[in-house]
Figure 1: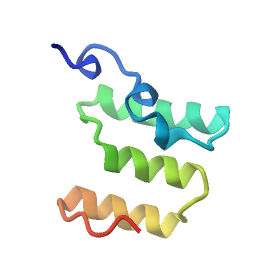
Figure 2 (figure 1 turned 135 degrees about the horizontal axis):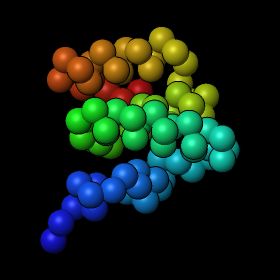
Figure 3 (figure 1 turned 30 degrees about the vertical axis):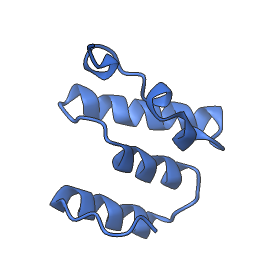
Figure 4 (figure 1 turned 90 degrees about the vertical axis):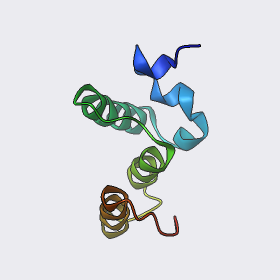
Length: 81
């Protein structure tokens, strides 16, 4: 079976629980940001999507968002909280 993410980008269907509590504007902004990265070759993963949705929804601050992004880019995922 082909992974639907390889032919089209519908990130909210892949992890709908990560988008809970976001407004339509926040959902759109997150999806557009992730789609742009996907078009550049990034493969979606749950941790990165969770990081952005939590930031967009105000559940983490900018400093925590950056810390998690840095950890992700280094391949050193510490605790999620």
